[in-house]
Length: 394
Image (cartoon, rainbow, N blue to C red; front, top):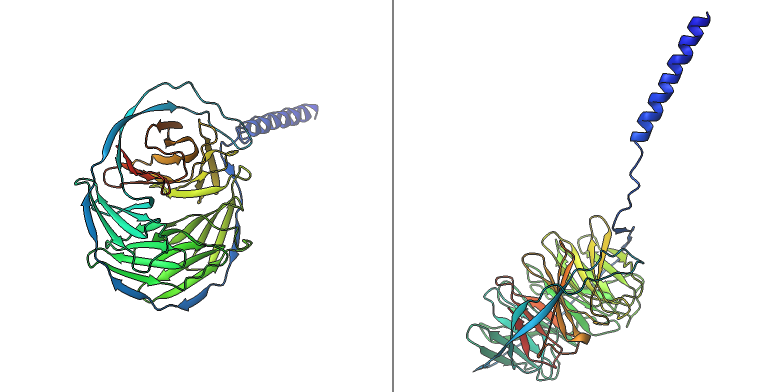
């Protein structure tokens, strides 16, 4: 009997040892994630819909040749330490020097820039109430005077058809360059602010943000739909937007959030940015659907990335303090270009290597501006809100 009892005790001991051994090797990893994840707020909203009657007129354009100035610009490349929220960042000593070509065209006070499929660069002239087009290969500039007058055209976008849409304080306008025809839709809702940020989808519908709302103009039916984003008071405002897979992503600067509107379900999703009071402004998207945005507050001074599918944020601190960055764009290789208006620089982030390159020099003005990338050549065009010529880095 004692032998059986001893056998039972030995077997029990072996079973406990095996259990402990297996348990140790199945413990979860304690290595922390190097991302910031959150649960966004999701809300259903009821849109308002109205119909507007557009006005049309034909304009006679002027065409002239502008001789550009061409210079070389040096850069500094810096590799920042990976930054987690609430931790400081560090930068290496500049390790390389690169040279790019800066070309400038002395056009009249460009405010915003958009590029069509042929590489022609369209821009708004807010001070002169004109729409301009630059053909870089011939240095030819064509200008159309806006018949509606005194409306200071600002943001601009080009549809794949070649039609050019732009925002004025009291509505949305369209220029058809082939017929020199302007169309204006005037009764665009503006709850608490001017129209800002715009994009055109594949069907020709125009989206913009105004005050605390996202607005859609269906140009084929003249129907205007407005979605009021929950919790946003008039005059606190949305800043910029992009279209991705039929959804509208936007920055909410005063609320320190990135938002998404799903027009098909009238659903709004809001993500809070990890860095407090970062003042998000410009937005762009890479080929994988990741959302990049600028954090323009001098106390933040970062480029941020949101991966919507996983609700994760990544932030890169910029090497030059107080950059006031606003405009941002992605090239075909998913490099992220941005302007540093307060420091008179153009920057590039390579997310895969956490490398930031900055270019400074004559012609890169000390003001906040916009930046776009030609999708065919990856040349970078920029302007600085009426203060400088139209520039290109190549």
